[in-house]
Image 1 (cartoon, rainbow, N blue to C red):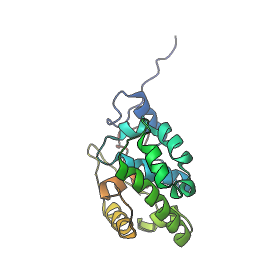
Image 2: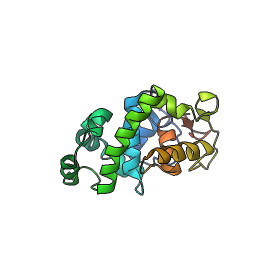
Image 3: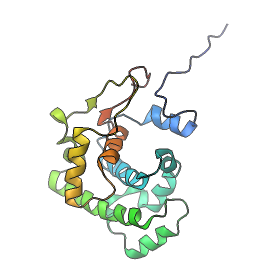
Length: 188
């Protein structure tokens, strides 16, 4: 007699959406230290501002194609012609301010890499002991933190757009700078 496989217990926010479940189970909350991946999430989180994350997640591959495989150097070199081209791309959110901010943020991302050696080093300079935060939520997950406030404030001062404290905190969750999987979640 075969044993029935038990469905793992996970955080409630992915619901029943297969893409959201895959993202939750395989990416969300897992530490990322690769600058290329950090740039990908920076660009995607900026596009997400004011929208649901699933809206962007469903367009992720379109964003990958539209934004040169999330290559920060290539995006930083985008021209006004590229912005106009992207404004016609139905596979992404066609918001001029967000598209222009992706180019500006790419330029600023490269400046931070030059100043700190890597964007990862920059981000972790704001973290207690330079390590991820392991929260232990039982039901409610925060939308911001003192660290996201500080990172966002510094990035805004440097000229970054669409990266307020809430978006910054979502970036921190996505890249494992903070572990907000519920204590009851098997993917913790």
